[in-house]
Length: 417
Image (tube, rainbow, N blue to C red; front, side, top):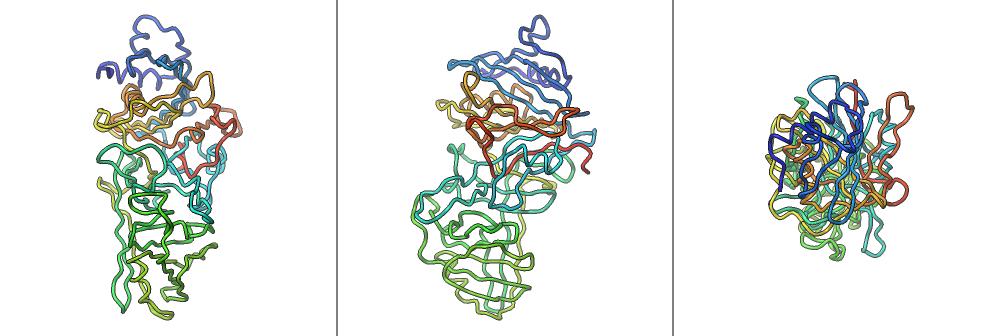
C-alpha cells in the first residue's frame, strides 16, 4: 500500500520545517509523520536545519523484520545558494570515505554514490575501485558506463541500465536521466567508434578511451568479462594505442598501467576493437572526440550512476521484494527543486533494512517523484557537518564498523556557485 498524494507532501514539509523530535506524534502531526511504507508507519525522530534550504533528520520504520532507522538529507535547489555535485577521489579509479570527500570538497553533507568495482575474480587482476555508471562533476565528463552484465550490485529493473544517472542540469534542477556516449577516433586510416570512457569494463569488440582522469590503475580489467557475464575470462585479443598531442606515440598488444599525462590519451580495444586499433602506427595523426549525451534536457552539470526504482511517483515494475539490506537512495520532487538523500543505519539493532521495493515506497512517502537506488551494505553512509562543527562525520554507523572507502558520492554544497 502506497501513501496517498495528500500525505506525501505533508511529510516532506514536516521534515523541511525543522520540527523537533516526533517519536510519538499525535493529532495532525501524526497524520503527517506516520505514513505507509510497506504497510508500516514512518516516525520522524529528529530534524534540524544545517543551512537555509538544507535539513537533516532521522526516522524509524517498523518492518516485519524489526526496526530500521534511516537518515534523510533534504536540499532545496530553488534558492538559498544550495547545489549538488559529485563527491569523488582524485581519480576515477580510486576510492575514499564519504566524510573525507565531503570535507575536502567543502560540502555541508553527503551520501555515498554508485556501485563500484570493489572485488575481482580474474586471476592477477586487481580491482580498479571505479564506479559502474557515468560520472559528471562540475560539468566535466569523467567516465561512462560499463555493460549491464558487468555491473556490481542487485539486479536492475526491466528497462533500466548502467547508463541511468541521478543528476542536476545546468538549469539547477535535479532529475533522473539516461546518458549515451558519442565518440570517435579519426585518422587517415579511417574512423573508429568509441564505446567507453574511463570505465573498468568495455563491451565486447569495443574501444575505450582513457584519460588523465582515470588515474594510475591498470587498464587490463577493461578487457575482462563479457556483455553477458562479469566473471567471463579476460580477452586474449587486445590492443593499446597511446596518443600524445594528437600523434600516436606507441602501440602494443597488452593494456598498460600508470598515470596518464594531461596531454595524453590511451585507446584500449578488445576483439574487433583491437583489430581496428591495430591499423594505427606510430606517427599517425589522430583526432579523438567524445561527449556524453543525455536523454533529457538541458545538459547535466552533475551526474552519478544509480539504478532507477521510482518514476513519476510510481515504483518500477520488477523491483525485488524479498532481499532486505542496508540501502541508500537519491530522489527528487516532481518540479526538480527538492532532493531527498537517504541512508539507512548500518548496524544492529537498528538495521533490519529494506527491500528495493520498500525503498521505492519510502522515497514516494518522503516526497520523491523519481528516485534511484545507490550502493548499499557497508557502503551506505551519510556524512553531516552541523552548524558550529569543523568537519563532517559519518552518522549512520556503517555496517563495516567504520566508513568504507567508495568510488563516489553526492555532496550538498551551500554558496559554492
